[in-house]
Length: 162
Image 1 (spheres, rainbow, N blue to C red):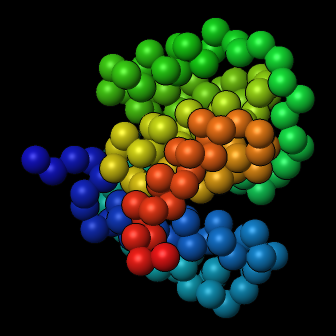
Image 2 (image 1 turned 90 degrees about the vertical axis):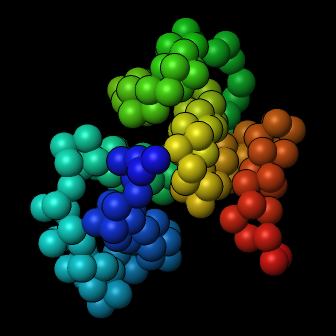
């Protein structure tokens, strides 16, 4: 059964966001390649549903956090906000879970936010997107064995030939 993430316009925008993210991390946000990706996204964007636009706009914001949130976690208690997001995820309300995480992104541990973002994208069948968030969680909490194991599993799924 087709899902909200199956159409060509969605795929074009989603994959373009991932490519733009890679360029941003290299300091090439104003490169001709980045401009080409933006130009190719204009037409498909108009064809998206409101839900798809909301999901992809949120992804863009969340990918921006990967670039800007770089401090290693210092530990601390896990907020009940994470339980709310987890409950939404388990109910299959991934967009809601991501919204909860986004609205509370200043609550530590920041690695938990990235990890849960990754889990939601993974559950939506977006392994490559999930991997970016899992890798970010590992960067913020390198001692967390769960994060490392999940990131490795996602890497093997995305790049089986490596």
